[in-house]
Image: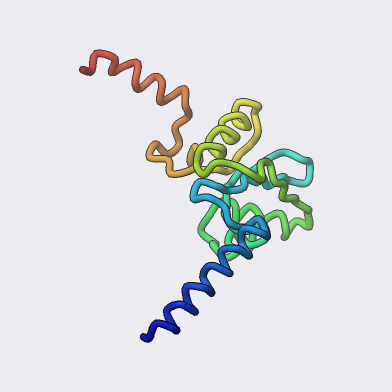
Length: 142
């Protein structure tokens, strides 16, 4: 590769990066948006996070047939019931914001279909209170 080709590729990358900055799409690695799926009554049934558009994430949910949210969406469609998608936080922190909003929704009694606490959860199906009990039981650890 000659020097001109390398320079032109480098310049193209710089222009692309500048366009992203101008459009507001150059986000950090921890940036995401947190969304909620609500049923026809208005109850929150699922809270998720995405770096995609919310529409793109919903397409992914519809394709992934093994998940509880996909099965729920299909059942709602079969019953001719509407559901809505609402962005809860458009400038959220990856993994952290989702966990906080899921805990708040569960504390408020929302019937969530989320299988984890959110994010990269190593403790599936356990709430923060359960984890606190686990740590309290093992308080004599060094």
